[in-house]
Structures are given as structure tokens and as C-alpha cells.
Length: 67
Image (cartoon, rainbow, N blue to C red; front, side, top):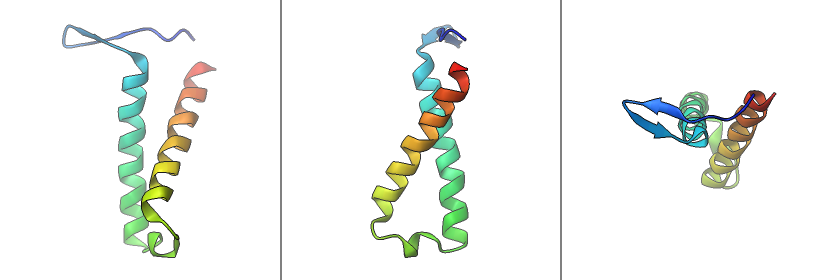
């Protein structure tokens, strides 16, 4: 698949920005699940863990779309 711009209310948006927002939404859901089950208290540095998780989710989205 080619990465093409997305028309969002008459403004062309780069495809990576749509993927960034999508990954952010997924991370919000995962953080709520982790907070519900108190999983982040077992992590040494929660902010670093969330940032790394965001990069993993974003990479998976890019790889899935690129195929």
C-alpha cells in the first residue's frame, strides 16, 4: 500500500499523523486496562514503560498498513 495523504475536513493530513493519533487512542485504552488491574505498579518506571509501549503500538500499526 502507498502512504497517501488523508483529506480531513478539506485539509490534507500526512498519513503518519493519523497513525500517531490511532496509536495514542490504543495506548489510552491499554493504560486504563493497566490501571484497572494495577499492572503499572509492578513496572520500575511507568512513564518510560508507557512511552515504549506507544512506540511498539505505533510500529505495529505502520507495519500492518505497509503490508
